[in-house]
Amino acid sequence: MIISCSASQSLAAALATETGRTLADVSYTAFPDGELLFATEPDADTAIVIGATPTSDAHIELLLAQDAAREAGAQHITTVIPYMGYARQDTAFEPGQPVSARAVATAIGTGTDHVLVVNPHTNDVCDYFGVPAEPVDAASRLAEPLPESLTDPVFLAPDEGAISIGQTVRDAYGAGAVDYFTKTRLSGTTVEIAPSDTDVADRDIVIVDDIIATGGTMSEAIGVLTDRGAARIYATCIHPVLARNARVRLAKSGITALYGTDTLERAASTVSVAPVLADRLRDQQ
Ligand code: R5P
Image (cartoon, rainbow, N blue to C red):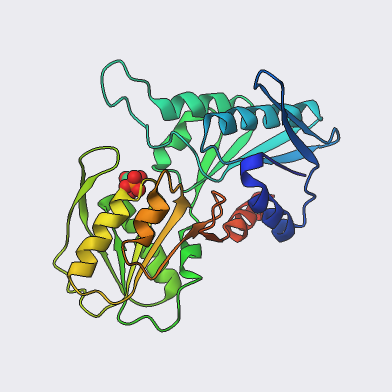
């Protein structure tokens, strides 16, 4: 039985199709004071609870869904977190600040037996759940929409943290170079990019990142590539957070295409991670 939170309905449906499991009836309502009310079918034995947590309400809803599964009789609960919010706050950056990723992971871990997290910002956050938790790498899926005839392509990580994702997408595509830029974050929305020496003129570029949030990182990288005469530029990511004006910012930057996966349900979420999750769940049966 797959029990879906409201933020992950399309992915839950795709996962049900991929795995042949039943998609549980669910309802998402709220009390007049704003408190959420989650309900599901009262007959689950083994439950897969799936819910991205891009907002505080989504976090609460995931906790309620886990508890509903337990109340419904589930003896074993696997919690799938397609996008884990707060994962980038994986350390106390200033004295007096929390390790926010640990705080939310601890809460999620109390309601489940096992956790799968799709491309967390760092795999280390899996240690915070207090129950067995594993990252699931869905980066290979980003090769799927690319045209077969890219010209001398470069798979570019906009910072060092995304190099392995770039390599995975290149391997899945089957050809091309891997390169990376070096990034310094100046504020929440602005970054400074130090480009590499790679000649990108007249080459097709696939920029690969784990997250596009404000679009600041991607915009800077696109600017550098455009100035250097790159041909087509594809902006891709696992998690298309696309906060505030990010979509317009990227549309104006001159990209050929923007796409991400359905770990977050956006217009740009044209690639599903369901096959990767289904494989992982099958391996664990
Ligand atoms: C940072 O380390 C991540 O890999 C992304 O590059 C970053 O989160 C993107 O954020 P933004 O779109 O706001 O630049």
